Image 1 (cartoon, one colour):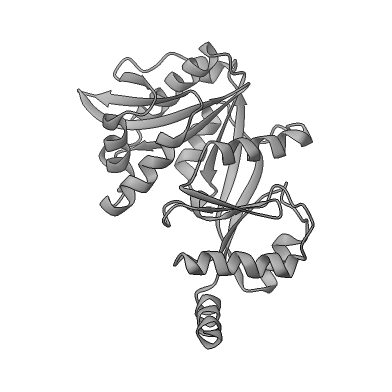
Image 2 (cartoon, helix red, strand yellow):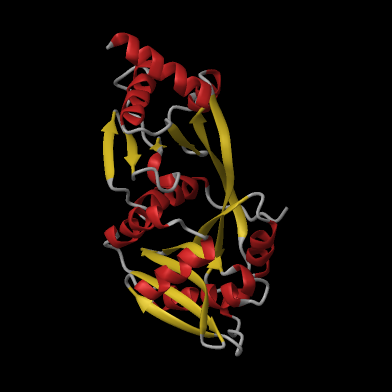
Length: 273
């Protein structure tokens, strides 16, 4: 396991940056929590961010309100669970309530001055950098990640809503766009998202070239550190980021109400009506 400690206050900082970098279509505030809704597209965009709790309402009361909100949207109630969540007893309370732990993910970080991220881009790749949102980049990303047509507009709108400086990189092999990365400038931090490679072009270094291009852009804009998220089961991506100098900062996961519990909640709502 490769780990480099970050200051404790950086954990909450990175979590807050990640929330700001992924703006959903709708946000409802509930006693400090942020209830995010984006037509069911992406877990981060359709889950509760509990980085702050004002403590004015009892936890059971807040959980019931969360469940009513998401069920009314036709979505399973879901929470983003990380080391800075409030209150501290949230995760075990959700587990007892029938919420399943899914999508275990590692947040990683690196200093942008580190040698691997500054290494020369593979000359076999041509990388095009676009500041702002770009349609070619998005088409390449959807092809690489096999995004279904009905999910494309809600996902695209998340990226278009961002008002912070942003850039997207497309790596080409033999004039074919094959790999992508998206970056958001957030003060001293650069958030990197949507790193993907078309299946037939994987393991040829194209994503590495895209990521290095975004890192160079971030350094030019004044960023000193970079963070990203990677699923804990994604061994190839973990290996890539390790070679580029990334280290584990902290892990997070989601707690989603089980299908059986969702069905029971719907039945209870029907009886009340």
